[in-house]
Image 1 (cartoon, rainbow, N blue to C red):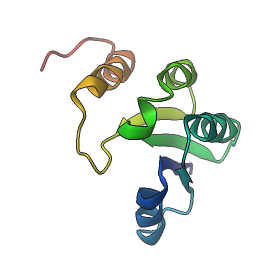
Image 2: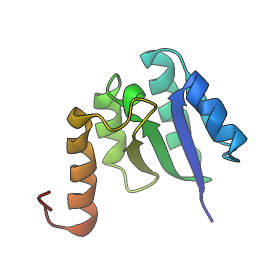
Image 3: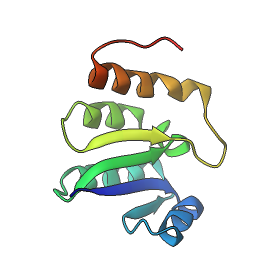
Image 4: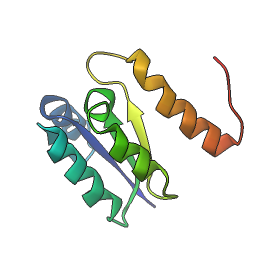
Length: 105
């Protein structure tokens, strides 16, 4: 069974750890986030990498490149600011790739 990893702002990553997610990584900079993403992409134990939207918007090219791989699946999740409207497109791309059709909301 695969594991879930979270890349989030440092304070938010702490909450995920308290909730029991052992693979929760707090980052301060875009470079640190991108390095963490690629390190997790090489970890065969990880099946899903969730990146908070606040972090993801700073490393979107890397996330889009990582999302082209079959595994692990890379998704964005809302952070402490709540859902960001500009981040809906990556989620819709993932749905289209997974389901095979575009879903209009």
